[in-house]
Length: 400
Ligand SMILES: Cc1cc2nc3c(=O)[nH]c(=O)nc-3n(C[C@H](O)[C@H](O)[C@H](O)COP(=O)(O)OP(=O)(O)OC[C@H]3O[C@@H](n4cnc5c(N)ncnc54)[C@H](O)[C@@H]3O)c2cc1C
Image (spheres, rainbow, N blue to C red):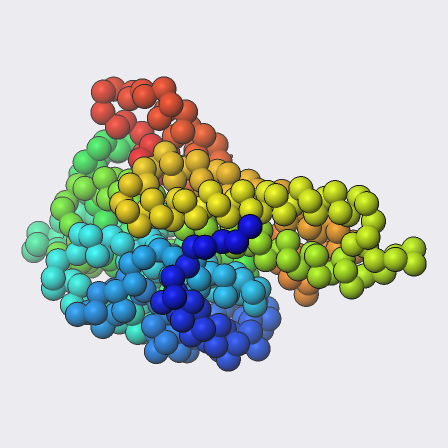
């Protein structure tokens, strides 16, 4: 079926993205994967081509590309080169940090940070998760207390933070009402915290896949945070995280759709090239049956994600809808890449083969940005129309 999804402008953007990937990414990606680090020069090269900070408005030095299809095009081009770790690094910057600044940043904050986010000179991370609080953000213990001079002192620990080592600043979800235990609706705030005294990164976490994207613990030891780094209103952090949930989930669903398409195409090519028992693997009836299932699932996933992207563009994608599409696409991604890997035989298990990398990358998608169980919880609540105490009583990730 023809996929009439992208506009002419987006196809032109694809040429720019493809050229960037060909020149700046593909020849080096393997080394970045081994180093567990993407060089900062890649960010500025991407910035020069208008490939990061896509939604930054023109008045702040960006291209103002807020149609989500541009992000999908970029993901597709990165996936063709197997550069899924770079796609993840860009995702954190563009889908999690940037929307919060665009929606809740003051004019002064936008003027200060957005031009550098679009040029790739300021690389950001999103620091919500802690060793003791992932699915349930109300358990976050990192706290900011007033310094008596209008600013804040931040203390605590975060974990699993992508771009944590390579980045310059983190969007930190912290408790600001002095409460203990599970926080309340107004207990948390968001701060953009720039690296400086007391802000240190822990060791690089040794991930199964997506190794080029650095992931680390962050430590905040009485870090001075100016009042001007508070994002939006004091006590509105949980609300802002919820508002960002549709884009965060959509982004993961879109990445999943891209990974399954790429994995399927690579598997058809591989099985057509590989001979067994005097024929091609592709000609075995069992292979064809598997590929028939795979192609059908890939097309259904793409179609579902495309609809969600258009709904997001219209501003109508609800958190529960985004949860459903993330649940479907990420679960398909683990299952499809697994079956594609099987059709590669032993080579599928060798890391230099793209399918091995895709399989490892896909495994994150049912966990990161809210697990499948949390997606089902959100969807179930939406179906039941229930609210625990008459308000939206859950946490940011579980109950948007
Ligand atoms: C590679 C990687 C990169 C990441 N990047 C970032 C990042 O950049 N920034 C960031 O802030 N975070 C990041 N994360 C964190 C990620 O979002 C969390 O790991 C995820 O939300 C799950 O939280 P948790 O690990 O604490 O699991 P837990 O919350 O401890 O969950 C453990 C298990 O319990 C289940 N569970 C929990 N609550 C319920 C419930 N109510 N009902 C049913 N089952 C439940 C979960 O589904 C899971 O199976 C990253 C994680 C990884 C692995």
